Each structure stands twice: as C-alpha cells, then as structure tokens.
Image 1: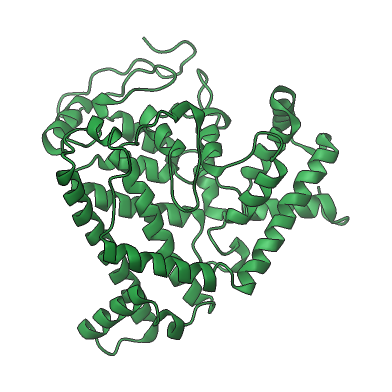
Image 2: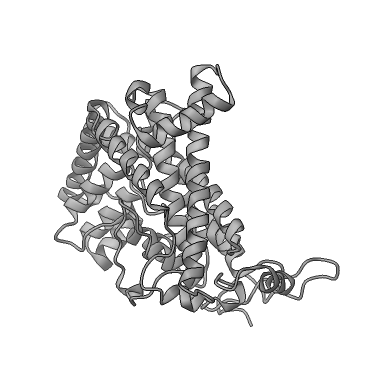
Length: 400
C-alpha cells in the first residue's frame, strides 16, 4: 500500500516490453563488480515508500535531487568567483555537473553503480551557502554558540527537512546510502561529522569516488577560471610539475596551438592523467587488500581510493600553488571580505528584528530557535538574492 497521505499510488508492474526495475537490478547483479553497491541491497528510506516499477532506488534519488529547489539554486551560488564577476566562471551548479561527469567515468571503469555515484555527486553541494566558502565561514562564526554550521551537515538538513515536495513526509526522503555519503563527504574543504552516521565504517566506494572526483574537478577548473580572470600566470604555472608535464605532452602531440586552446588541452591532459592513475592505483589497492564485497569496503579502515605516490605528490604541489596564488590573490580576498560582510550584516539584521524574516522561517524560529531559522534562510540564498536582500534592508531607496 502507499504511505498514508501519499499522492503516489502503489506502482503497478512494468508494462510488457519495458525494462523494469527488477530487470535493471538483475543487470546490476550481472555486470557490477563484487564490491559495488547494488540497488536492491539499499538500506532503504527513512519513510517507507513503494518501489517504482521502472526506476531503481538510486535513479529515483538522482531525479529527486535534480528537481529540488536547492539544486536549481546552485546555478547562482559562488564556486570561487562571485556570480556578477562574469558569466564564464564556474558556479556551484557547473562544478557539480563536472564532478558528476568525472564520478560516473570512474564508476564505469571500476564496475561501480553509476546511478548511485551520480546521485551522490549531484547532491554533494546542496548545503552550500551563497558566496562559497567565505559565506560558510561567516555562517559558522554566527552559529558558533548555536549548533554550528557545516555545509555537508546542512545539505543533509536540506534533503531531510527543508525541501517541501511531498505530503507524506518532509524533505526528499533519499536513500540511506546517498544520505550517508553526504554526511561523510570528506575533502580538504569538508569535515562534516554527522552523529547519525558516525559508526566508524567507510562509505560505499561510489561515495569515495565522488570525494576524489570533487577534488579533481575543482583543482582543474579553478586553474581554468584563474587563467581566464588573469589571476594566474602561465609563467608561474610552468614551474608547477603537474602542469609542466601536461603542457609538455600537449606541445609534443599538438605543437603550435593558440595559447587559450593549449591551456584547455593541458587541463584536459591533467584530468585524464589523474583519473587514469587513480583507477589503476585503486584497483591495485582493492586487489591487494582482498576487497571482495561492499561490506569489505565499509570495514577497510580507511578510504580505498588513492593516487600513486608520484601523482599524489604532484597533485599536492598543484593544490599548494592554487592556495597561495589563486585563493589568496588580493582580488579573491576582496570578494571574500565583501561576502562575509554581506552574510554577517544580513544575519545581524534578522537577529535584531525577526519580523523581517519570511513567515516560514519565523515558524522555524519558534520550533528550533531564531539563529537556526536565520541560518536556514541565508544558507539557501543565491549570491544575487543575498545581494538583493542586503539592498532591501540597508539601502533606503530600494523597494522592499
């Protein structure tokens, strides 16, 4: 039967001639690696729902994420460059799509569940604030004594509570595996620590694939954006071993390219080198550790994805270069400082007079406290919505 209050009737069997969910699940059993996560082995959802006749649990997760409000808002949320700086630069949405593309490629090569990897990738930044990590840092400061803020934990709150699309339950009611992946997403920017999932076990390999795809994507597209913005110099990049090796190979194979095309071909070569090395090294680790099931993955004691020592060393040097020459560039620092000021002053204005909050967030304030309600409101804003709110609150001639 359908859950009480559901508008979705219990799905009928798939019509004859169509590929059913059961057929897709059988295909997974036949084709996926033994250590992959299989749809029929999912731990399910917090709120029970009937299965769909034509889509697996992870395919439904992917579709729910794509149709969510939070996903659409990623189009106008900062990656490194604030939205109004230019149309070329990556946003959270384009970054998310790049991560999904790399994660699916890795999953396909390793025989993992591509649908699960894609769903996790599409969801991994849903909790991001406006203005990138600077917005998050300021919200964390404002929430320091009120439960804190971390964008992965907030992303879980978005999909569990804040999205409102179904009459029978709050949130998107995603599968346990996607929610666990969001809670355990760990990169140099991410340390979520969600108590519900703090069981000492590793997430599925599909989640681990998204973590490393995230790093590969933002390192390489930040180079592209940095060069386009003239914040990075080719002469300085030439001193970074990873870039130099990729550029030499491009020049050897395609001599005399125009500068901009050569840059892009070098970035393509960088990504290809890192992904190829990653899957080869990871396969060797899986074999060496005797990983033969998804349970073995969870009990491995650490992440299984890894680069070879040489590629890891070059990748770390590239990240150090970007941290010093791009993320600390005076123009990026100016954007960061302005962003923090936007968030701080918005937060303090709503704190001083909660009547300025929209009604739905005033209801949250009554149930969970004013600080959390303001945090939810600001975290859900796009860059330009936050800028518009700022003008409405502080510019006397702006319409409210």
